[in-house]
Length: 286
Ligand code: PMP
Image 1: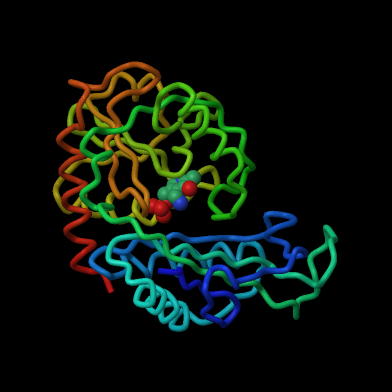
Image 2: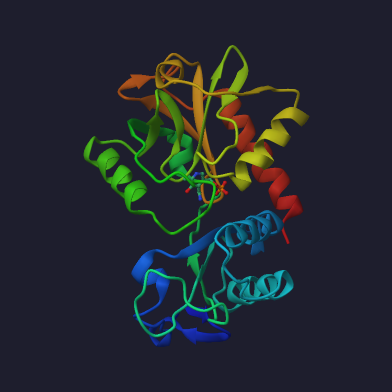
């Protein structure tokens, strides 16, 4: 089946979809994105992603390409047209193109570019990777200072994943000024003596949609949560660790920089939070 994608108001076969070579997303990474997961053919936390998209656009003085209702309709139509039961919807909005390359933003009436496509991922919820748990390495965080804006500047996170792969691991956590910021594409947590510790929100990390939901669910389940800076050594000495993201939900971490956590298998709190998250999110999916 040829994938149907959405570009600037049109639903097209992926082979016919085009964007200008002068698009600022392409030339300057002047673009923001969201990834919403699909379970049981329904969107998980669409509202959270729509609100964060608006915030990213506002922070960069970028125009909204359409209303939230239109965005929901496009998401749903792509899920339906591509027959997605489990998978992802990728959305990108760029500052568009005024037909040339210039560091200065184009005039305010330049239309933003909007692109959406689906990724079919059978087995997303019942993931073998989550049963095994992830091995991570730590690397320096050399990204720019506005990580709270979800831009498409993903070269360093991409390099981080490659460094992890080269080390025989699955992912990397990044460290700045002696403290863990986040994973290359997820928020980072460790658990010690039953308490969940994660870095507080600031411009230094992405305000994860899954982070917000998981912290709420943890509190509802009477789990203790502390939001504070932490070091990689604290995480290495933890009973367990995990990451959260919209595409991998709650992912147990079983090894950090070659040090096994607990008995080297996914920890009970990470497993429980994954179950609760999947359960509750499915119930609320639209
Ligand atoms: N941090 C970074 C750097 C990310 O790329 C992501 C995934 N987009 C996250 C955290 C997790 O955010 P979310 O739960 O909204 O997917």
